[in-house]
Amino acid sequence: MKASVGPEAPRKRLGRKGEELAQTVLKKNGYKILERNFTSPLGEIDIVAKDGKTLVFVEVKSRLSTLFGSAKGAVTLRKQRKLSMVALDYLKRHAMLDQAARFDVVAIDWTSQGPQVELIRNAFDWVS
Image (cartoon, rainbow, N blue to C red; front, top):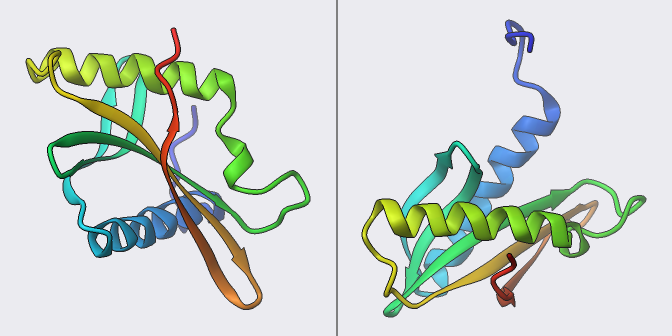
């Protein structure tokens, strides 16, 4: 894999901008942000937060165009399976296997009118 030496790639910049907006939206909805970009050998979770007593694993999806579908539809079954594995790894590492947890998605479609943000609580169940 090549190291990036120039300006940040547009896709990466969009992802970072989306995660920052998602964090703001989550806080406005009462979530407490615990961690951003949790990484394990199995993958990454964009945001780990608490909503009341529930631990929430948040996937942030940003789209500049709906040509290939909306941001909301970008969390495929394969992605859900991967997120489930990473979330389980998080719970094991933090000795929280008995903790109530769920998956939320923050879908952001960047339009000419500005970002259209949708917070989808309990977006999908654990997938094995």
